[in-house]
Length: 483
Image (cartoon, rainbow, N blue to C red; front, top):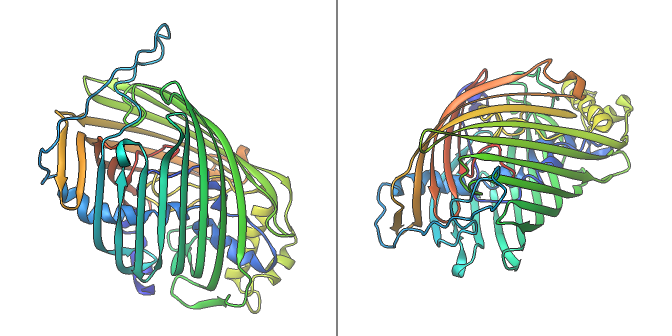
């Protein structure tokens, strides 16, 4: 497996994830707590593992899509009438686009597939699972999957359970993993190369999260609160050749909690598939002190996306994103003490790098990362980290919309509302402080195909190319969104 990990650097990588989940409010929490103590090496690994757990672990759904969904689109049978589209006028607010249809999608859908998987830096095996959308004429979705092979465990989630009908929604997710290895880029900033990674071995990992959303005005205004817990026990840290750096089986488990709150304003013509208008997201993610040597900090994320109609059906999309970590109380900043706590004999250079990385995180906190499934898609998940993040992207979406076409086969049921081809370019920068942003940056460009489903899901497959090679992403949901 380790030989494959080195070979794949600079070539095409595959990243997968899936159904709607409250990632945005949990993701920043996992992008590096930067703590000292016996957990210092583990915490550097957490930049990849903890918050992005909901993305990488969500990869079950993308794997299922890759094997079972895209071929299914060609085999659909028309067994149900098209989904009715409902206009939602905005009255005297002429600057707010009318909704193209009812914003609480209730079209029933499902898919279920057993499939082999192979994930770069992790390995291969078999996954069995699926999801059911809009159960019993509601908007509630349920998904469940189990893994065997290089990574063993399970994941489950329930989204859009209506505590108060069409007003107060609940999302819940949980997963448990008993074994996996993940490539970790321990150096913060933008200067590291494609092969400057280490391999983290995890023997046990648990994550639970919940989010409540209060929604108004046909989902044009939403407010959310979320809470998550995370626990991970690591087994070892290796270099990119698979050579052991440190045995971590004796280190205590890393535990963390985080909470978030924010708002979402969506002044577009459709919550699921916008083609004109704009939307804005503002989130605040609080990270209390996780151990005596950890910092206390919070992250503020601001995300603005504009949509301009091109012709009768196509759309030009522009996205601007900024994330800033703000430290309330510093963590341990004694480099020698951090180096002694890494668990490495003789203070090896690799471990000193991890210690320095922990020091920077303890001083500046860690903002939302770049790389992976949504921003800088050509790069691995959580590739670039720092105390501040900035991003800009543009995408031209060519929509080929015909009559809604029901799909009903043994492994899948949905309604195909539109097919889409996209061209995109992205650029981003991370630094320890905001005044250092754009001193270094990375850029990628690519193309993708999507299917907009009547169940409320957008099935997406993108391929992007950057200076470290190409990345293939398969998932559910548009890029640049706060899922």
